[in-house]
Length: 415
Image (cartoon, rainbow, N blue to C red; front, top):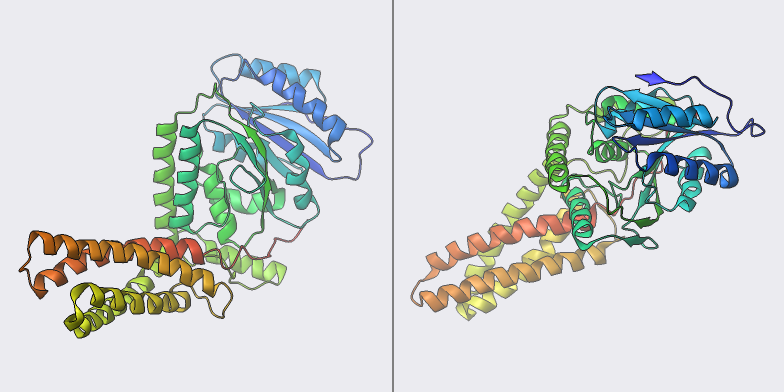
């Protein structure tokens, strides 16, 4: 690893916060110089804090590193850092952990994000209002230009994160983020990924630790010349999600210990309201509620069967769906009180509609194909339909209810 010597930056701004803006690069000889010069001019004219632009080259094989060194020699606000191994996450970890700035940030070399969002990204961290800040292309107020394929992949990935990991942030992979350096010093040793999943892992750990995540809607234009392999990145992300799920379920990730440390140093609760307790525990409790609901459903169905299979299925499903949502609010997701109850029950009724379509459709098909099937066959078909409906209900309720408590207003001590 190589770092050019420290220089005095932005004279006349002494006493204000220092922000390191890292640009991780790999084989970016074409765009690097123009992007760095454009960023430097913008910061010098519009940014109220002292700053450094750190070009973090991760094992480029073209002229990226010589260009980075030349830029550092020409501009007092530019540093150059070289790593011998590839990986965007690795480059960010090295640059952030060796930084002495108050806030560390990063952006992609193509400057896809409008630079006007940089101050709203950094200011809440400098003031101490938030601990982590991210640009989001998926929030209200964002303006994004990109192809339908990348739009679909991005939205699908973030939906997967909300479903499986219960995240509350909207856009994990936007290349525009900032962290208070003291927060980064605590979190980065826990982040294992060295490549594209680095962002997601950092944000999941931040949320689980009770840190405040600030989101900034951004204007973003897709780089049509990007060399990112979407398929390979998707596979890597799925492996990362699975690793995080296992780590959180097994307790291998020391989230509880980090919370306890924060509790002692910042005099805050050791548990963080609004942060999901983990999908494994939720699945167990949801399964228990589901078993009870299924037993109640079939008891009601058999009791009401004399009025006809379809009416009995409708009434039994509706009654148990309402009871199921109420039980899951309290037992699975730990939500009490009336706040959000209407939205949760409407979501539960929507899931009920899907379940009704599955089970009623199954009964209709059974009746069409096998008119003399009898009750045993009806029950067997309903078991399969209810299993599929239960999975859909869990996904729907988890998406609705994990947002009930947003990330707690908790932050690490400054200094």
